[in-house]
Image 1 (cartoon, rainbow, N blue to C red):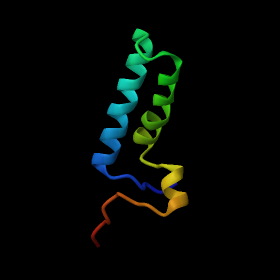
Image 2 (tube, helix red, strand yellow):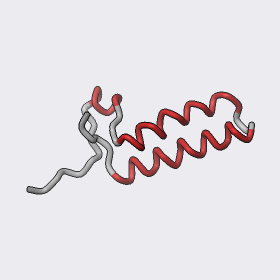
Image 3 (cartoon, one colour):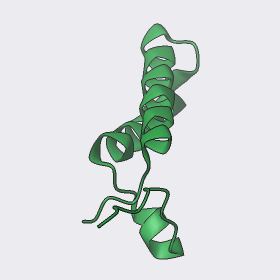
Length: 64
């Protein structure tokens, strides 16, 4: 698995995931908030399988 998410992308995913899980925990949005696990996991891993399928890469290129 190659990293295909940039820093801002990863940070936004983690924030969105935590917000969704927090809203689920407080009972604000119900069980649908458990979908927050997906952006949280992909943000922490730095790899998104959908990005791989679509050929998207927001990770900046390493300079040699």
